Image (tube, one colour):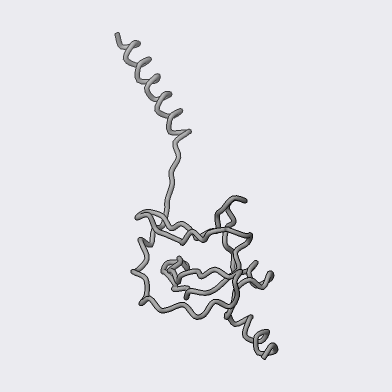
Length: 131
């Protein structure tokens, strides 16, 4: 009887130690949903027929949110539609372009390289040379 209890105790310890070997622990930091959108303003005139308006939005920056003003930009391909960034109550989802050629994640660094965004600091010098 004593041997059976000892064997059972050893078996339980082995099972518990093996299951804890494969256990996973995960930690996450959440900053919650962003504030409501800032006061809506009228978009400036469209700079050309191939530009689309991207509404202003909040985006996570470290442990807080920053506001990104609305702006005109050229979509990555014809008929691409802007899907605005959103917060689903648990996670923030970045904005992106979508259409018949698939999803294209929006990256402001590539915008500057391709000269797609209009009326940002990098456009002011170019525009003043045209006038």
